[in-house]
Image (cartoon, rainbow, N blue to C red):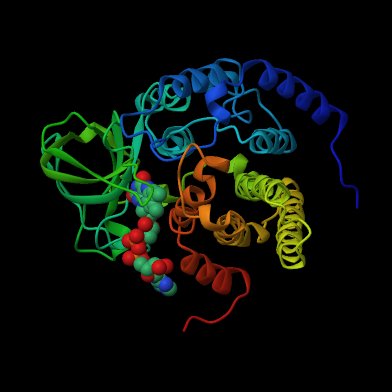
Length: 388
Ligand SMILES: Cc1cc2nc3c(=O)[nH]c(=O)nc-3n(C[C@H](O)[C@H](O)[C@H](O)COP(=O)(O)OP(=O)(O)OC[C@H]3O[C@@H](n4cnc5c(N)ncnc54)[C@H](O)[C@@H]3O)c2cc1C
């Protein structure tokens, strides 16, 4: 087995590194802390950064230039994801548009709807994605927000929850029930909804961290043009899996990369606190390092299968493992800080990075499929265990 990058990959990396060295905005690498959450919208620097990445073909490298890419190969996309995660640089602060809506419209949208894609990827349009409801989260197919066809509009009534960016999004990619009489997966459709449409009320929800970038969204007799239906009526379930297919092989990189950076910072923190000679601390740090290294190896193994056109069952495990590992690492950071471990204050060492990240880490174990659901998927689809 040969582990390494080709010459073309290294040329790609050199060009990327030169671009990042010259152009990454200072704000992109500042560690988030309390008050960082974009309550009031996406900060101007992040919008400029996303637009620059798009214009230079670095936003979604696997796409063609007109969609913010440069037709990069899967290996080059992996190089790209690794370089960004190594530096802790986000390409966007609102992933819904480029990562979910764009690919869904490219695959299922009408020609007119596809014209919305470049602005979604460049970040000129901010999108929210309305899937979860009070009675439908893990069991998404149970959603009950109703859309009834009246002439050339759908009339929408119902409620969404945990809708990230709803308070400042321009549009919503909304999943609705269009036929309540058939099996639940079969009566769902997707609509493009302008958030300025009468009949929409957004009530922000506050996170454990103090920020409020997600919300409850209420629809009351909200009229949506029937032309905004994406794909066929009642065929919305197929769209729920929409994502950047060519990036699937590297989706684990961000979570594992974040854990790797945390381990390096934990080692530095232990040294600053004079704890690097403590056998208990050394053992916990060594274990953390070993876990990150093994997750990385597993990620590469899955990537090799993915790049060869096969299925990468390793990747089902990586989202679960890296998000759960994150919680442990940040908790260790709090322990190493001693009495300051639970304090968030710009004047203390690390300014509260560890408790802040600990709070945020819970979100990664819930959003995009909870850890329990991931375990069910691994048990059933990877290990082939029977359903209970
Ligand atoms: C930061 C963040 C951002 C989000 N952004 C969005 C967004 O933009 N748009 C959107 O639509 N949603 C969003 N969500 C919602 C997210 O998709 C849901 O929270 C998630 O799907 C879980 O659904 P739920 O919260 O209703 O929990 P539930 O499904 O009610 O689950 C509650 C608990 O029961 C467990 N559980 C449920 N079913 C099973 C089962 N079959 N077996 C074992 N355990 C089970 C779960 O693991 C969980 O611990 C976001 C969530 C977070 C945390």
